[in-house]
Length: 489
Image (cartoon, rainbow, N blue to C red; front, side):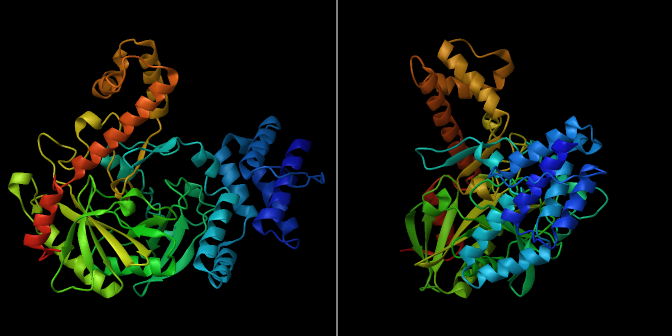
């Protein structure tokens, strides 16, 4: 049992050094940890914090418990989550610390909370850093997330984010803070006020980008996008001007997997859409103080820029209302039918010297016999790479691809180098492999890897083109002119 005591003492020392554990609470917290690991006796070892990561210290604890035959080691994730939840500050203390940092600056506050979330092992940064990621020549960011399960069926995605028994009502309710059923003992949230309502902010444990977090309505109400949404998004960037914030389209197949609970996503990284230029400038006669235009983007997106949040929200609502009522049989666009509403916008905002820059991504989730997963979804030839819904983050140019690709693409690289034929088990890759093979007459290990990256970037760009409701920028401008009252600037 000595090794278990040493591991416990090192974690206690870590909590003193990095998590704010006070000397007065040390005995109480140590006894809590001893109970969690199932140790009935204890002898201090005098171990100090040695500078290792929290992940390394937790692995040491699990190994020591395993060697000692303690039952707690049979559920390592629950064990480590429980231990860290005991070591870290309680929610009220985290909220108070966040408020103290906010008094200095909002950026200092979010940096502190993110760092604390990493130090407490809520944000799995070690695993995040191990995910393959690159920025392609076409400007898109491509990542492979090994930790995120792949939901190829939207219904399974929704069920995967609900909680059996009704408590908490979903995976992002505030009642998850400290909830054992989802290993959320280390979750800490901070309160926000948006649109006169109580919201809260938390970071994502398996974030897709730097400081990826979600702002969540304190009330469990369904996702929706309206003028009030636009106002709340701009209020958020007033609070945190170093972040972007956006909202998924509130419909299946084109939105997120948690449509039952109103929330936004954002964080500390400028995504490719925000860097894209305007290719067709537009103006609205009733809003001379707001500039507008069609974004040079594979999907369908328009941008509004202004310094008055209420005016930007008013014009955004004009665009939303025009799009959500738009019907075009020739283009396969159906706004509403017996199956319900099919059109929505996905807004995303950054704050710059020019004011609020709001991108509105036009989305539609209609299906057809040819495209049962969605007419404006990734087409079947690309499903081997990405079949899941194309939500807010990917619509902005950061693709999250399934973890299985790490092994599968490595196998394809070997086939490229050897010059062999595509194995039968990878028949679904026939088109993708053929395009890679056509890039060069022969491959080395390095050039094969570059070919795979180039192909992934190309596929992701074509998936965005699949999601485009208008296939040319001129068509988007025509819609804005004829249906939303804009003119060419």
